[in-house]
Image 1 (cartoon, rainbow, N blue to C red):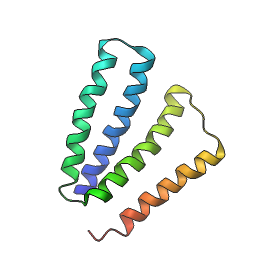
Image 2: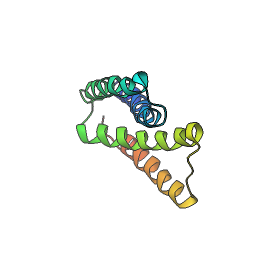
Image 3: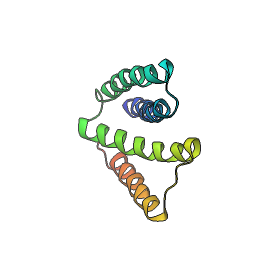
Image 4: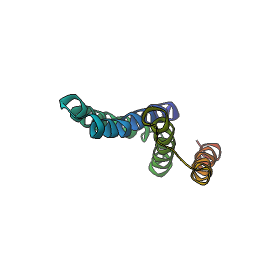
Length: 106
């Protein structure tokens, strides 16, 4: 169950980071308040996941998959580009997260 909650935390993390970019591009009260609201939800869901997972593992997975998600959705939503070497290093993050999950003793 903790891994599923962590997955939700990753989704909120991606939404939060993308909302920061959206606020910078768009402006306005909704664009400013959305990242603030998501930051509270983000920390709450991560804290809930850490009840059943070690803090280091949860944080590493959360930041790693969050970064991968932001890269992917930034390309889709904002047209940001990555070169092949950067994509290789993003793939290493995915390998690291998968290894953390696979070899976790819980």
